[in-house]
Image 1 (cartoon, one colour):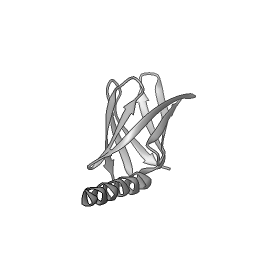
Image 2 (image 1 turned 180 degrees about the horizontal axis):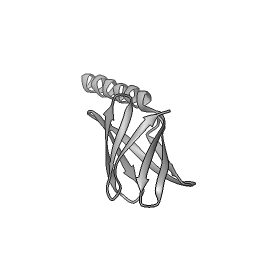
Image 3 (image 1 turned 90 degrees about the vertical axis):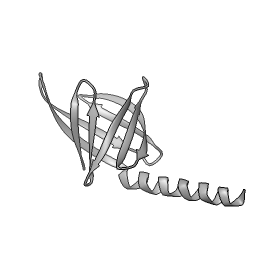
Length: 103
């Protein structure tokens, strides 16, 4: 039992350290039918996050995955994210690929 607790604690610590490395502010430029839109994404160390798009704030939660992350929206959607260097690429349904650069 004690061995399982040690492994669980180790796994939690590793997950937190990876989350800490990704925490920060990112920005993406999207070319839509109405022109260019700047989208900002903030990832917090506690797994919360938000998108800021044209004055609208959309909260979400996020979790680490091998090679990337998953964004969990309030309405239950899951958006896959992939790490590309220090940046994040999100494949957003109905929008396409957004490349968020760390700021």
